[in-house]
Amino acid sequence: MTQAQSTQDQNSAESATNKSTAPNLFSPLTIKSITLRNRIGVSPMCQYHSVDGFAEDWHLVHLGSRAVGGAGLVCVEASAVEPRGRICPDDLGIYKDEHITMLKKITGFIEQHGAVPAIQIAHAGRKGSTKNPWRGGNRHQKQDVPDSEGGYDIVAPSAVAFNEGSRVPHELTIDEIKEIQLKFRDAAIRAQKAGFKWLEIHGAHGYLIHSFYSPLANFRKDEYGGSFENRIRFFVEVVDQVRAVWPQDLPLAARFSTTDWVEGGWTVDDSVKLAKILKEHGVDLIDCSSGNIRSGDRYQMGPGYQVPLAQKVRAEANIATAAVGMITEPHQANEIIASGKADMVLLAREFMRDAYWPYHAAQALAGELGVEPKTVLPPNYTYAI
Ligand SMILES: Cc1cc2nc3c(=O)[nH]c(=O)nc-3n(C[C@H](O)[C@H](O)[C@H](O)COP(=O)(O)O)c2cc1C
Image (cartoon, rainbow, N blue to C red; front, top):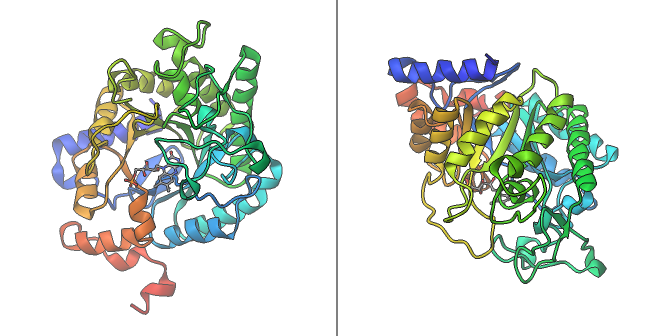
């Protein structure tokens, strides 16, 4: 039994048998050799603030202030494993050894303030070379950036564009597939050198990995397309490459689009099957997101709308999960943990609004959980407030 499994089993057993000892939002979470001080994580969020993939002072301040604000996990945005794997030309990358220096400064600062530094390694696939959101791109309609403005050729399992405004990707050959998998491996090596203690593979939101496993974007006829086993092959092999170099005692997470929300698309039952397989291949936690495989698809979103997906994957694949998506309220977040729906919560936009969300959540839950809000912030602040 892996340590992640034993932690998850223990949490499930506790929540089933004894409410008073059930974990809450401020309980530590241990996976492998890493303990988060609470169950609150900063979800990866692209900042569109890089040139040639380099992290800048912006990233140090943006991520560092959320560590100061009390998060247990601070995850660096989708970081491309090769230049053409950036969603936008101004995305972060981890495809050069030179990227390590600034990333190391960021991980050092995050750790110094009690949070665990994580990074999401990613490849945009057919959603690459697009304008960033405030220059005309959005998640439904991607706008190509021409080569003259820094755009680049893109790749995918099949030569089908995401939408009419984006490029037609080159269909990857088998050799090229293997090369990209090695780039994920190299990115994991750099992540460790940069001091990250938690690694997430981005397998969601219509990017390269998701576009392999979803039948809505993969039309291949070879061993990487067609059946469920063939469509997940790319993801499983990426995990194998990464797990071979990422230290065994450090957590490896995978973000899924747990459902395409579309008839004929990837389903949450598929996610349960895949989670079981990836667990066997050394993945410790599934970060349960959803959607974004095709530009025209629409689905209902609302508070905590993806929590049932995390709950199902956790219960049926017996693996730790993170719940994400429109989690904004302290009581809502605490209920997700206390009722055993997920092992941790990840917040994105709410952390943009409030870097001190964990402190404010501790204030809101102090009476109920007996948590002392001042323990959430560094002494530099708490002695004075
Ligand atoms: C500005 C922004 C950038 C994002 N960048 C990423 C990213 O790099 N990787 C990723 O997997 N998801 C990304 N997401 C999705 C978030 O991680 C999160 O899953 C989503 O916003 C739902 O959570 P929320 O309702 O708390 O914002 C991004 C979201 C926002 C708002």
